Length: 123
Image 1 (tube, rainbow, N blue to C red):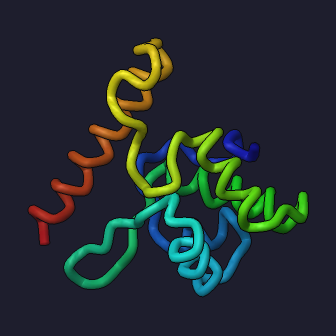
Image 2 (cartoon, one colour):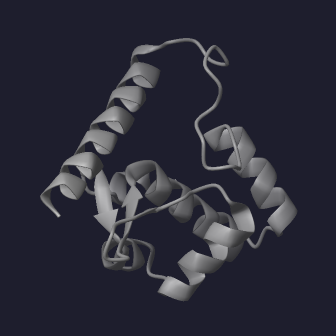
């Protein structure tokens, strides 16, 4: 997938995601409702922030839906296979070995949470 095109950041504003994925905001909203594989954080002023994983999911959905012309059912299966869920939550603990890469992803996610909490404290 197009993961190499994603800047090395933990969170992305909606406009950044729209630019990276080259899709309209309405498309992001539709995919969010239709596939439930990502859930952006909405701050107090109503701005949506997406995690790196959210961006990876969005780019995967775009590739499968638009470039590979797969149907929604196939995309849901692919999301489950590649991202471990279709409900916006990480797979349950113990469902995969704690490899160094898995631990890096967990750390990235925790850093992302800290960043979001720090942003809320400043508001």
